[in-house]
Image (cartoon, rainbow, N blue to C red; front, side, top):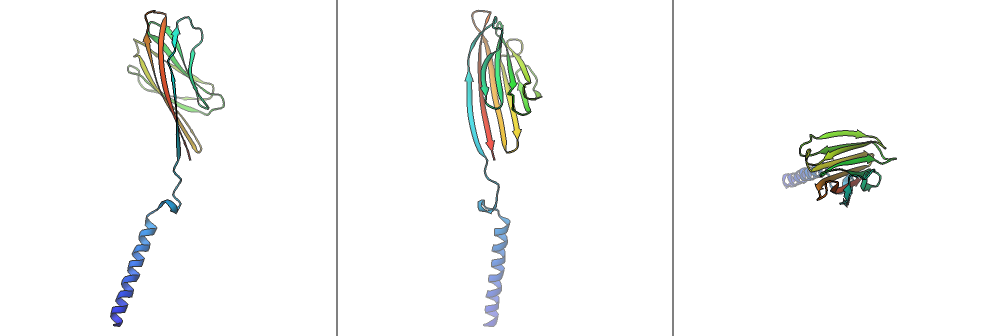
Length: 169
């Protein structure tokens, strides 16, 4: 009887030890795991008809705290798409890619800008990604812009869309 009781007590002790080890090795949600980031998204869209005689670029949309996209018609289905970092923002990585243009990365500080030509010679579409990384917040905007020639050689039809994804920890 003593051996049977000792055996059962020993088996229970080993089982408790194994169960205890298992629960220590597996982290559960209440065990101090980092909180899940909150993700938000905002969409932007623009489709202006632009003329060659326009002296200043047409603002397509401004993304609060990040920057603004603009377009300027160069005639015959050609346009220049520009991005300018907002004052008071932080340094941003701006990546552009088009069908006939190699991908480029640029670091831009507040107030700086960059532009890409689109049209029959370079391809009618360009894609952009703008990333702002700061402590506790990640903001990434992706945009796509196209240009089309209209019946008049002095007009351009530009379309653009962008999505801003924000993650706060």
